[in-house]
Length: 68
Image (cartoon, rainbow, N blue to C red):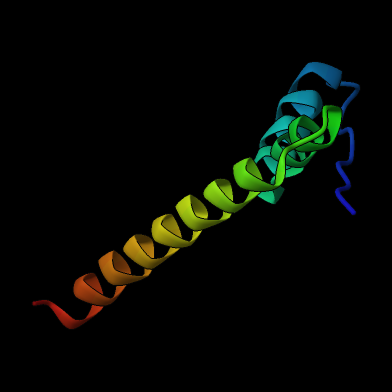
């Protein structure tokens, strides 16, 4: 659950922080996926693309930490 506290009646700043947190958590992506039906072939392609993206990110992190 995402929570944001409003400090000093600054609602605009709190809304900006809330949107950032929701973006990081992937809530917007989840809402977009649930908005309409996704065919099984599209779901499979999306999952494969996400797996490739995760693998590349993990490889980049490992190369940064190991220094190769």
